Image 1 (cartoon, one colour):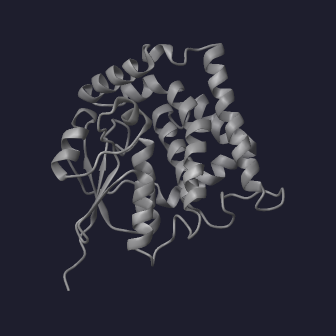
Image 2: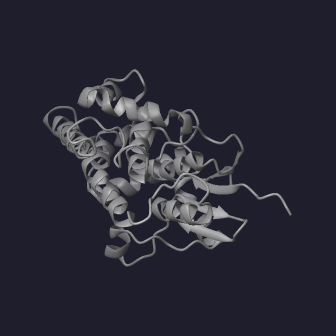
Length: 265
């Protein structure tokens, strides 16, 4: 029997340590590392994502932007499994695939919780990712290669109708974004504590991490990479809710790593 081949994760390279900094690919990366599945990374610059996806034959992803424009949209992460021939886009679909194909590993989406996990993704994006993405839009742009920086800035500014620097300027606007994020974190922690009838629970589903926790951690570790571990922003997040999120990130630390074998397409 031939040796199984490592799975291939398509991700976006940043200039931060480890290159990985986009939250959606981090969801897939954490899913792979939590399951202990050997994999390697192919790094794809932002302007090349559509071309690479078409070349390997991956389907376009359905997003609100794609539906509104009527044009196919290609996004990362994409996972390629040469052992089965599978080619999957979207981090949630990747988690479902890994659970089904590699059932002997930790289950990310426990049976019967697909809808719950999907709803968690939408809630966390609204309550956490969107305000943080506005706050750190400039840092995200400046943490890319020149080609990707130009693409990132051009496409985001076209979508928002304003310069990145105007999305969350210092003062009342940024303060409101921080409040939105921290209020959202408080709501989410309150939900997790329902597992203990008001006592503290670390994971969304109680004693075992699931994809919902992966989503939160992916957002947090990307902010750490962009802002820096010594920044005021990171300190605020880690001190929020009596250090709950710091404990969650620490619990995931064993899985937060980037595979050493990496290439360009």
